[in-house]
Length: 57
Image 1 (cartoon, rainbow, N blue to C red):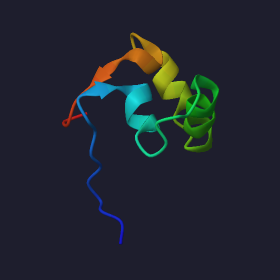
Image 2 (image 1 turned 45 degrees about the horizontal axis):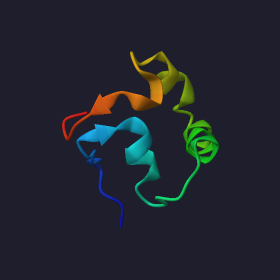
Image 3 (image 1 turned 45 degrees about the vertical axis):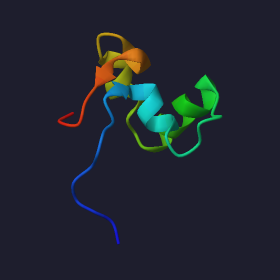
Image 4 (image 1 turned 90 degrees about the vertical axis):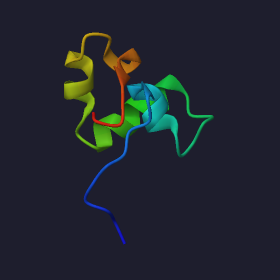
């Protein structure tokens, strides 16, 4: 079962990507974003992977 609503923790984009694998390196985080076709979007954020996000996105 996959929920339609996504959940973001109040933390950085990188920390949210790293949630399932806390030991992930920065390159692994970027690779995961590339696979999800999110890397361009994340790179365009004000602080990139260090942009703070919250439960509302």
